[in-house]
Length: 100
Image 1 (cartoon, rainbow, N blue to C red):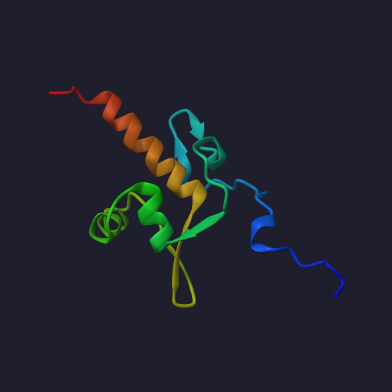
Image 2: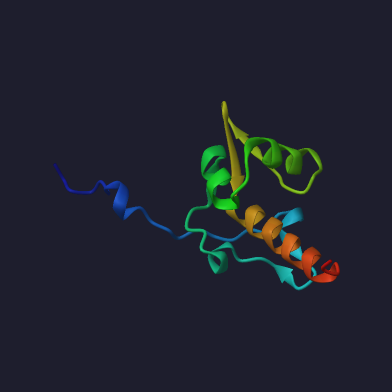
């Protein structure tokens, strides 16, 4: 063996942040690394864990246009940059609303 294969623990975490239309906030694009995202895209189950939501809430956000999903064959993915922007918008929206 040539030793060129990386184990799953040695995967590269480098990715280019390419803001999509939904991944910008009033203050500019959101860097997913600032929120601890280490991969360029996440599957549905990983996204549940990252956002601490269930399937219904996740797909409701997609249906409302608040979060974008992409399909790769049968797999549904969520780009880290879109997840970061979604979380940032939630935080910004919470800051604007008064707390009761």
